[in-house]
Image (cartoon, rainbow, N blue to C red; front, side):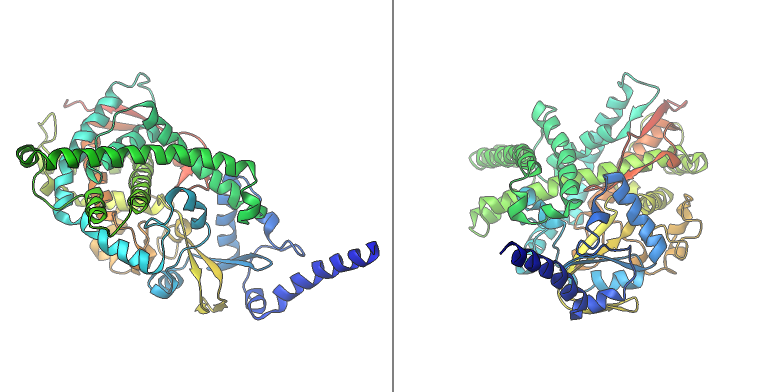
Amino acid sequence: MIIYLLWLVCFVLVAIPLYFRWCHAGRLMAKIPGPPELPVLGNFVTLYRTQEDLFTDTRLYNKTYGRIWKMQALNLRSVTIAHPNDIEMILSSTAYNEKNLPYTFLYTWLREGLLVSKGEKWHQRRKLLTPAFHFQILNEYFHTFRQRTQDLLLDIENDKDKEQVDLKPVFTKATLHVMCETSFGTKVEDTPAFDKYLKSIHDMGKCLIYRLTRPWLLDETLYKWSFNAKKEKSIVKELHNFTKQIVEKRRQKRIFNSNSPIIENLLEKKTKPALLDILLDEEEQGNIDNDGVLEEVDTFLFEGHDTTAAALTFMVMRIANESVVQERIYEELKDIYGGSQKQLKLEVEDLRKMRYLECCIKESLRLYPSVPFLSRYIKQEVDIGGYTIPKKTFCNVNVFDLHRSPDLYPDPEKFIPERFLPENVVTRSPYSYIPFSAGPRNCIGQKFAMMELKTVMSELLWKYQLIPITKPEDLVFTADLVLRTNHPIFVQFRPRMHL
């Protein structure tokens, strides 16, 4: 009996890998280059990496295997692409816009919010929420951008360590306040709950990557018994508690205003509604339930603050290391406002005049895209880069290395804002630069983000000269929900002499 079982186990261990290797999908995948595989396990061991190694190895494989490469184990298959033609094929088509792994790992937190939803639900929610980013609303948000930027400048001024400031915490706090006050119409204080939310975002990213790099935890049944699942449950509870408070606070304010028409007219101008008000209006009409409101608030609060904070962190660091660029931005600001003002009298119309600053923002997002990797689930065969990708394959888009391709951007590691002058942009594929993704599932809030980035950077560079502490070559990137490094990023802020 024991011998029979041993033979059965051996047969299964041999037969299953052979089946997946020689079935139709296996034969297609065999033609695609990729890192060496182990019998049975495939690339499972290759995935078992630290966050730093996972990021580094992904870049190495792109360099080694070219525009498309694979990883697989049994019936789990993935390909990674970094060529604009291949990326356009995937991102531009509604046939390939479904998300699966690793986005499904976010279900406990974001549920089926806009980031991870699919099919008709995604289409309806996208249509519903797009008006929340109408230019008229964004113009109204500008005053909040300015106010919170002034608070940010005050925080920098009051920082006890004048020699170096840790950028990420400062910008994360500011961008979270901006999201709460604009899209959700709710002011929040710097309470322990506020700090817990920020910490929980970071912890959630670690949980996700921990699971992604341990293939045995991909199975939901096995995962729910793991220590990581218990930790994730605790983190999600903190994240949900914070967003529930925001929604409830806004609900109470709406009730109060509706019972006080005079106060409503004084405090709430009749404008296009903000994102949370759109959701609550739909809830009152029975078109969405409370869970639907919460999942979108969780989604937009995360996406709207953490990605912008990352963008600001890397841009300030890089501009500090580019003295000529920094001075040219300052000269542009002087041309717009004159050089004698102690404080910018910034108006929303002025943002459109900041053409060089806009080029600098785009160049920074090229080098440091807040979301360095995207993923789509291929549900039907597709020809990419000379290979046929079988259905039920995960297709990863390597934004980071797309943006650093020497074929698209000569001297890719150099900071050259002129790459984004109109006459240079027109020569490149629109899919050669995708910091906000592209196609039907592009970032719904990219204009919001650009307006916020311009506001913060113009005010910051008018008041302070940025002195480099962290160098670009010091950065060691880690795999996470957004682009992060394994050590803090520091800059010194030196007050401008004209102030």
